[in-house]
Image (cartoon, rainbow, N blue to C red; front, side, top):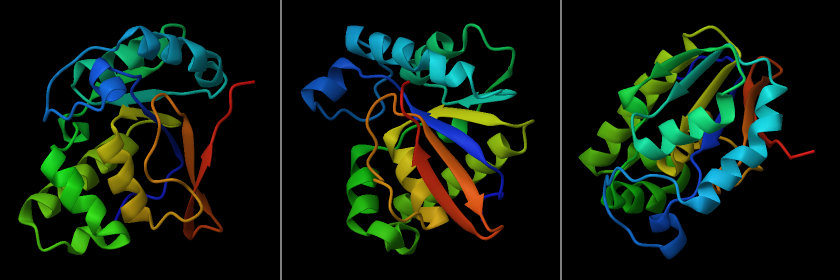
Length: 179
């Protein structure tokens, strides 16, 4: 179970692999020009959130996004290895099970989902509000754990999302828009 604490999530900015749909497992690639522009565009949204802790994946694209969006924020930064991206095979198997991904018969999916759960709980144990900068596979797993409805589980690059608990019971997700 993920700690019931509101937080913000951003998938890293675009990379050349995202733009070309090239699927390479775990390549540690940097943002491309579009990704840098995307991160700079959401900087004003992040600046308005009173973030106290920023937790991020150890991969370059997430770290670069974090640096670009948080340069004027006074917050503690935490690199959390469990927020790293899944492989293409895990993505394929995880998404094929939809909302029941944790019940997948594939051991590698269960290992990844457990990794995400541990990473999220580490992040949410930090002083809040917490901003998490990670990957599409992490976002999918989060949505699965929280049984999120009325929100696209496949997220675009640099799209800020506010996850919050409604009525002390149900997780909700809201995409934040650039003003």
